[in-house]
Image (tube, rainbow over all chains, first blue to last red; front, side):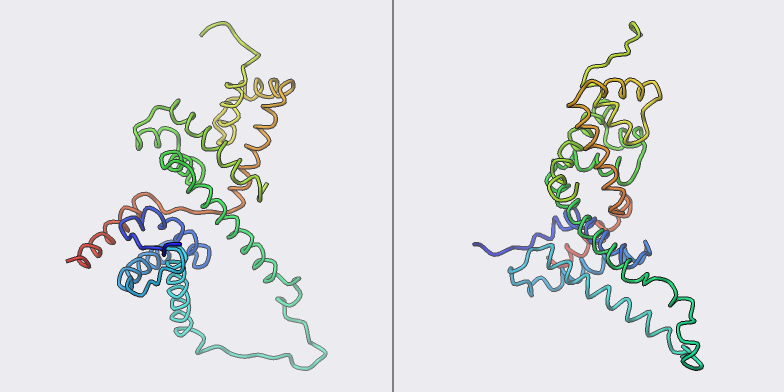
Length: 183
Length: 86
């Protein structure tokens, strides 16, 4: 099999949303997420010669992004935490009195939900990438970004009945694609 | 407007069903759709899958870049790309 190649011309169109979605679920700050995505693309561009062609382009970009996200957390953690006061229970009698500890392990649950959601997100991206570009665009704007019909029609220069035909085809294809694993 | 129709063909039923997913259907349309679903198995199936799709997407919390933000990103990246080549 031939090795994977890099096509930076298409990076933004192909992967910007994917990387952004990956980032926003971990950083949850819109501006910061956008900066991280941009940094990732620029870093990738600089280190193109390091790409061995063993992973797919997308996997490679995600691995750079992961490092950027870790760096980001390191940076904010080194800014705080210095004034942290450590407190302990007075004695064993009071053990378990912290409010947080009485909540039924909230962290595990969140972690699992997030994991599931990110897998589902991957599946949706995968299915979207199989649609014709125009269908994907209209579906995305209408369904995920929630734009009004008129706005999309003006933006893409189509009529409302065009829009609904496209939406119908996209929804049929998306249902079919997601059906096997996620419905 | 032609004469008032309470029975609609499948094509129209599916169209109304699509609109319902975005809360774009009128009450009358929804009534017609539900009436159609009473006797049409194929459209019931379509409606079922369509509703699931809406729920699945909502559950995924998937987010996309705003169009203007993406343009900005693209501009910046293309500048860097040009510099890299020259």
